[in-house]
Image (cartoon, rainbow, N blue to C red; front, side, top):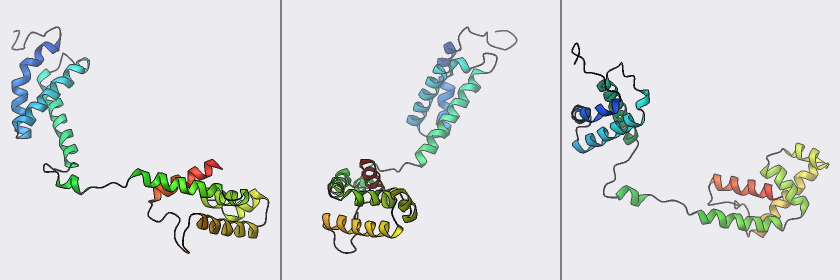
Length: 192
């Protein structure tokens, strides 16, 4: 030792193991749980080891390690605040997800019915329905009167509802969410 300072080692990694007892005590004071503290120390040593090139040997290694441990602790704390404690599985058992096959089945049925429409009806539904163009814009693109666009769109929707065996006023996608509807309409537009 010179002037009260430890002799610098060639590689600070050689001093990591000596810092573990102090790191563990600090981790226990933060986490209030020995198991979590051990995990924090392990994560700290791992991060320090893999980022040792960022350590300035002219600075205090313990301070650097304590900073890593503290930041790791608070990062994990923020993450766990978003998690739900469910050790007995009650919360998980109450969760449900709509099956993917419903959207696929609706898409197949829609695609079959859509393919049976005349080219004029498919065109108007893609322009006015799926692509979101106004009747005026669609009439310009199609080279027909606005009334023709409105008439074709009405007849196309009615025919599509018949092909899908929908009752008057029943939504084509009742029971499906907005995301599924958007995918169906985009896919139909792309298939045109």
